[in-house]
Image (cartoon, rainbow, N blue to C red):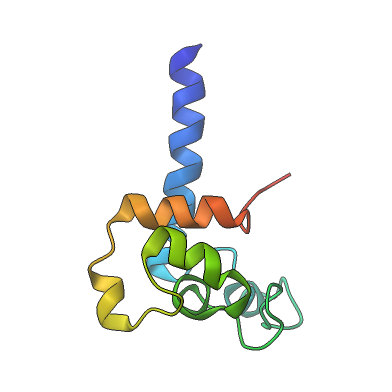
Length: 101
């Protein structure tokens, strides 16, 4: 039973992480391309198209969370290369953006 619980926790984390790293996360741009959304605008800030890069590095609605976990309010592409995957996953989970019912 414990193994099944751990497997679920890690598989959900892997789904989120792989999605963010490949651009196939449940972000609105990807969902629009798949025909599952009408618009690609970010539901958090309502300012820009929601992509993985926007979510991880630029979204103004989660800049304080980004600062506390990833070290800065806005991240450059160069900075993203140095972020450990565990910090990225912690940030994604803390945002609660990828919760599924």
